[in-house]
Amino acid sequence: MKKFWNWVHDDSGGRTLRLEGPIDSESFWGDEITPQDFRSELEAEEGDVTVWVNSPGGNVFAAAEIYTMLKDYAGKVTVKVASLAASAASVVAMAGDTVLMSPTALLMLHDPSTVAMGNARDMAKAIATLNEVKESIINAYVAKSGLSRNRVSRLMSEETWLNAKKAVELGFADEMLYDGKKPEESAEPEVEPEDGQGVEALAYSVRMMDQAILDRLGVTDKAPERPAAPMIGMDGRTAEGAVPFEILKNQLDFLR
Image (tube, rainbow, N blue to C red; front, side, top):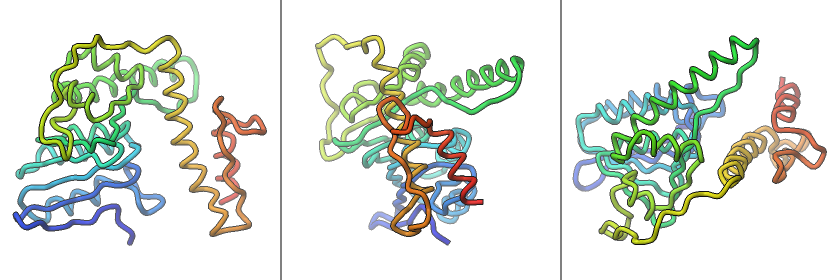
């Protein structure tokens, strides 16, 4: 069975783990980061753990379970962000007793999202649920950064991408890797995003995730008879004007 992790023992008696790939409650493609598989491996041994994170995120409930496992772990947990800790993966990163980021890494926070259908009451319930999920995520960000809930909420609503230096300044990370010191506080005023910038960033993030899923569904080099995954444009549509949901539906129908 293909696993998303590989334990490596270091000279100090600790263990190193690399979390690379999407986070989900169940494994569909075989490389998802799942809480069930992760738990048995984490609890199999004792000692300090270093977790390297490189993930676009995924299922927030699965991430919350992994976060809790790491916070409850008896040994010291050091999180190192290799390149990307986005969305739900950034929640997992907050579980580290110490969080280190590569100078080229990014941390991304945004509001949770879901797919809902039904009547007005169903929609209202979906909105209420999303609000509660957001509050639970804020708990993790505030516990690590020490920022106010309102500040964190705004960062999430604007979908904020943080480089290593900014993540350390805001308290989401402790140090930059290969630096050994915290960056000095900037005397420059914080620049707020202009109108529309948050929407553009959200569209970019969603497009990346949609494209990643479509690429998985249309691997032409391994299956020439399978339709190729179309590229998504800046407006979130393909050249034919279709939206990702329609494409995914057609691709899934093809696979049945």
